[in-house]
Length: 301
Image (cartoon, rainbow, N blue to C red; front, side, top):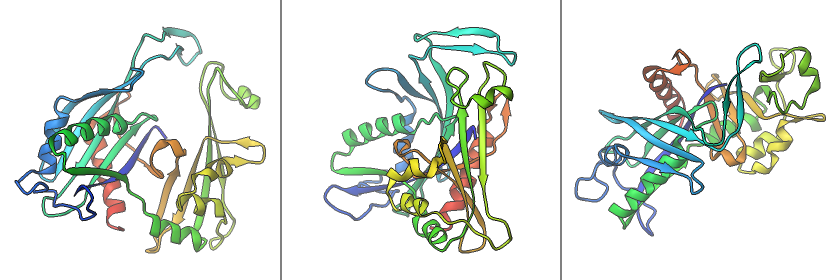
């Protein structure tokens, strides 16, 4: 899925203390989290030490208890041939070129509460969260040396683990993405023309309305044992790249989440269907679906 949402919690606390501060007056002098973040993001540009990746905020808008930011995420150092549908090369990308995509971030914080939220837009695997968080933490540490800003993955551990432990897994989908230059499954060639990416999906479910799946590795992954990721995405001798798990929650609703690679920095993400114009996501659609993704998990917390 090209577009996904990942949810994080935001808390502020005094160093060496566990108690969180109010987000509307976290320093005792009237400092507001969203106002502070707005100041940081308005002129923020960050890059990795090797300069291969960078992120720059190109717009920031505060409205009520929300702060909406759009960032351009760039990556250099990749040599690739850009081909059309027929497989003909239209552009040769060199290691000096920079690929830039737009990623969106939605911060939500009520001044009279101690916990806020961040919903990030993952655009075809690109996410601005890592570099933007790096810049935010640096600015915050310099301005408020006695306080700690905590941004942590939001985990529906209790609800989802209960569903898994109680055997309420309805479906598992394994996904494999095949690059044209490194096609591991030769059989894909008779379906996908040369030069194009291929995608293989394997649906696993049990027959019958009351039939459910059983997988202890998923439960272990949700408990924090990310070493079982390879076990989850392996089917016989084939290793897939992603896994989607559909479970029935305690309230009877269905919840589908993506089990992410351990290095992704969050336990799972949610697919979002957004509108695009010329392939470019529209901010209104992205923020609408980030808000929906956030609401769907926060109301269960």
